[in-house]
Length: 252
Ligand SMILES: NC(=O)c1ccc[n+]([C@@H]2O[C@H](COP(=O)([O-])OP(=O)(O)OC[C@H]3O[C@@H](n4cnc5c(N)ncnc54)[C@H](OP(=O)(O)O)[C@@H]3O)[C@@H](O)[C@H]2O)c1
Image (tube, rainbow, N blue to C red; front, top):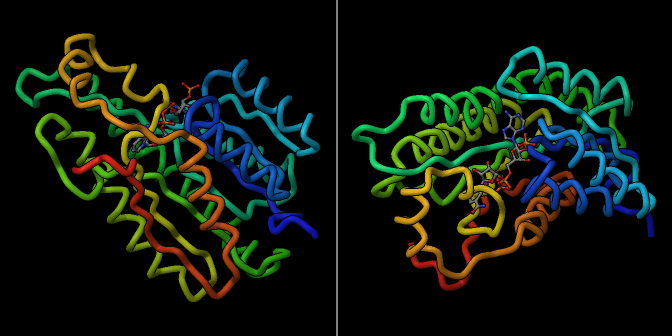
């Protein structure tokens, strides 16, 4: 049987680790040619080699999506190198937790620049290509999957600005979904709970120590990749708007 995403092209941001790497692998296994965007080129090269070993097609895009030109460049290089763009997985993100009082402002700036602006730059640059793919692509439908978080549903003590950025991703996604629904670009929101990746490791030591006690059961990045793959492989008339996924034991 022909893989569902055969002939399509997916761009995954934050593909050098965690959920992005797992998503790129999973989409390639479904037949998509994948463009891999992140700052660590060596990690992307290793992932691209794995995907090619499995018979897939992968393009490495070393870039920083907080830089508008580089984000636009990632989309353009995808279309130049792979011929089109059917799927954008807007995944690159950072989570820097801790109290608001006396928080280091550069951490807030980093989260807003990546989780909000980086995602918006990629969305803006990708949309004309996604709209075109929905018109003339092999599947007559295109997808933007934006990665939010449980923190995009509920704010908790200690996650104020991270939660702010993810609530913003949710609001933007729903508004854009309504705007492009009739043109067959599906905009989906994925809201993972605790997933074992590098995400928490970027926190200051004192924050890590205080959140370590909250670490419980985790999902694997592949579990979230599964959800992303499910969303983008639905038939043309089915749009999965939102998916909230927690480890079974996670209560909040
Ligand atoms: N893990 C969880 O528990 C969890 C829960 C809810 C939501 N999420 C969300 O899931 C998404 C993926 O996170 P993850 O858990 O897979 O964490 P991760 O392993 O830390 O991956 C983050 C990815 O973002 C990339 N990135 C960081 N800054 C970038 C930049 N300026 N330009 C381009 N790429 C950049 C990183 O690559 P480079 O460093 O190579 O650039 C990396 O590939 C995030 O949006 C996160 O908020 C994760």
